[in-house]
Length: 172
Image 1: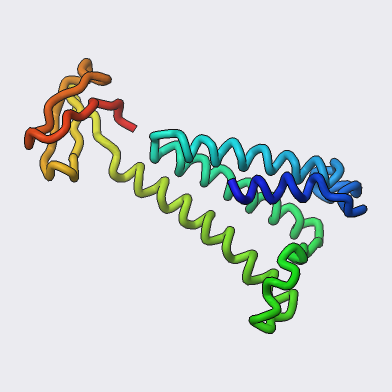
Image 2: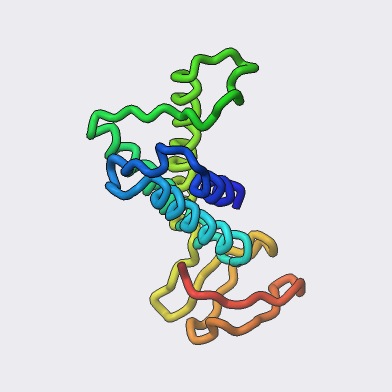
């Protein structure tokens, strides 16, 4: 949400550069920044108030992929964007602005790799649907396998260890 707030503050700014067209999107930079802020706010709200780890991962991967495609598009156009937004943040480290840009460019790359790694992990550890119409899932909280009829999806069942009841969910 902080990143979205930052985008909104930037979009409301009076810098003349905001009225210039974005080189890739060909719309005024102000609207591009505002659009990104709205998307980031939407993703942040879903991640904050949603309950699905899969959705969190998919949305983070989607944002990271969009960032990567945008940056690759700029590089293909021969543009090397400097992160001048860091201002004096890097001054205590005595880094030249170009070096700070490369360091800051690595952070979203980590987001891209981490997001795709999470999606891969979730796909590898999703419940499997058995041929007999049963769902097979490993519940780490109760350290046992649970098999229920596929028709029981959405119903609450007792935990094998007698702990809190669990809701049977669709296989991912």
